[in-house]
Image (cartoon, rainbow, N blue to C red; front, side, top):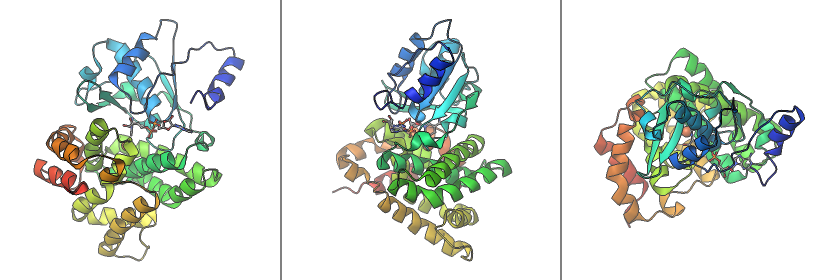
Length: 347
Ligand SMILES: NC(=O)c1ccc[n+]([C@@H]2O[C@H](COP(=O)([O-])OP(=O)(O)OC[C@H]3O[C@@H](n4cnc5c(N)ncnc54)[C@H](O)[C@@H]3O)[C@@H](O)[C@H]2O)c1
Ligand SMILES: [Fe+2]
């Protein structure tokens, strides 16, 4: 963000407005509690606001800094189901990926570096005061990151739509997001400078964020966080690896919802009956992964033995996160283990 010059888009107007600021640029993708602590150490009494500029990682870092600075202790003290309702400083979030929707969610995801655990931290302390959403900031995203982050937002919309906590407010946002992302993700991937596609993706990502912040995510996200923590797979990519298999697992438990999602996202036609639309959704998600070059865990470079050694622990962590309880079909531990196993056949 610094070396590419993107950060200047933020700092130049601040300087021109005569505002005094510091830059904390030591954020990392998939942020850890160590980085958050380093950030908190930089907060002084003269700071009155945090501007979170970047993808979900810097935005989550800023949110977590505000929460940790409020009452001290360790980041894991704030882990869900604890409620992190207090932030010390207001956060203004400016996303540069069309992905996490973190700019409008009451969540931050921080890895406990010691325990290799991606912790979900939830509460009003994680909700930004304001978001500045400008799709022009996404023109420089390379295709790989466009795909990963776009698949993350599609997963947010779909999971919010089938969640047991879905409601009319989240439905409207999820429906719009699936329509926008379904129609524009491929174009944004193939044509990075396509303004119409970038604008639609950014709007869709923010709407998907509002949707899942009000309806929760479900089994895909529950299983995705442990993959990210143990194997350092970028968040959107681990979601995408899981999405077809988890959708297949869940389909019959919410067929009308999945069928409507397939129609909205363009995987099925308006005239397709539920059963046909559901089948087309599964095929469509597989085809989308192929077109966007989403690797399997094996293709990503994860050895089968390492994967299978971690499955029990990953399944326990997925279940403990609470997200699987929002899934239309609530899985048992054994079912989660089977889903992880199916992603990486033993050779
Ligand atoms: N808080 C939430 O509600 C929420 C929801 C989903 C995911 N997350 C978390 O967000 C994190 C992932 O965020 P992300 O997917 O946005 O990716 P990211 O922030 O990790 O960024 C990925 C890469 O893209 C680069 N990048 C960002 N913007 C760019 C631009 N405009 N041009 C060129 N390069 C750019 C970054 O430098 C980085 O290398 C994960 O830790 C995930 O767990 C949080
Ligand atoms: Fe996500």
